Length: 203
Image (cartoon, rainbow, N blue to C red; front, side, top):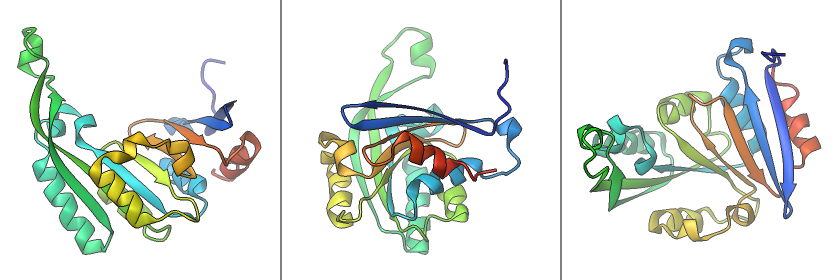
C-alpha cells in the first residue's frame, strides 16, 4: 500500500530496558486539528512536563537572532505564571546564509539561549501549546512522580542536564515540532502494548 490511511501508526523496539516508540500520523487522514497535541497529552498520562528549548536548533531565521523571540516568550510565560529558567551563552551557531553559499566558515559565535519551562498537566493546555510552542522545535521531558522540578529546572539552566541519562531521569522524553508528523518516544515505563492502548482512542 502506497499510503496508509490509518490516522496513527506506532512501531516499537526495546534495547537495554528502554523502549523506543516511533509514532507517526497522517495529517491528510486526520479529522482533528490538534492530533499532534493529543498524542503528546496521551503519552503524558496527566503528568507534569518540562519543555526544553535550545535556540541553536532553531530554523535560520530565528537561530541567528533569537533574542527578540526569547524576550516575547519570557513575557508570555510570566503572564501565564509558568515556572521557567532561561540561560544565555555564547555558542557556535550554524550559519546557513551567504557565508555557506561561498564556502566560507559555516558557523559563527553568537548568542544562544536554553529555556526550561515547567508545566503542570492542567497548564499544558492546547491554547498554551499553540501560543508558546507552535512555531519551534522543543524537547518534552515527562516527570516521574518523585521528580523535583526545582532541581531539574536548575540542571537545564546550568546545562548539566545533558550529562544525565534522560531515560533514567524522566518517565519519558521526545523531540517535538508541529511541522513533523513523527514522535520518537524514549521510555523505560511504557511498553508496546501500553503505548498502543494510549493512542487507540485518538480519532
